Image 1 (spheres, rainbow, N blue to C red):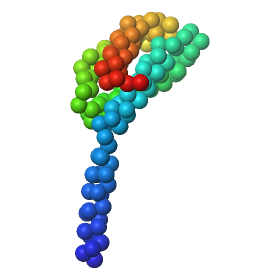
Image 2 (image 1 turned 90 degrees about the vertical axis):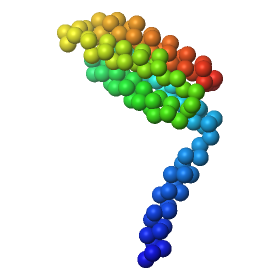
Image 3 (image 1 turned 45 degrees about the vertical axis):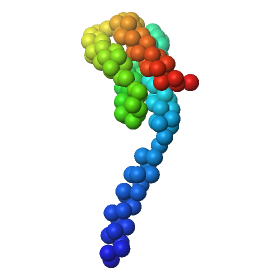
Image 4 (image 1 turned 120 degrees about the horizontal axis):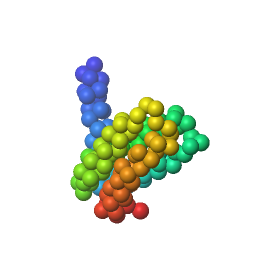
Length: 134
């Protein structure tokens, strides 16, 4: 019985340790992948056009939020990751999206966030460059 309890305690600890043995290169590669996904998500949000629906716009918005969360999570493991500019740009994009009036057309919505979306793309590209992402 004692061996079973010890195994139940030690096994999770071993799993945590083995999962955290990721190299710095692997952590950076994961962050680079997440940054690329963020870039694609922002491009998708910007490419919403008059033939798109508001539902497609909101889906693209959620994809950006999810991608940014993944970037934040993976950046915690990379010492060289400086998220300040990207965080600020993303916060501005979130505010711009929240400020879209309910009666705005889809085209007006996309135009109203274009500068903020470009700022996120620029900050994302700068971070990717600083990390030497492929």
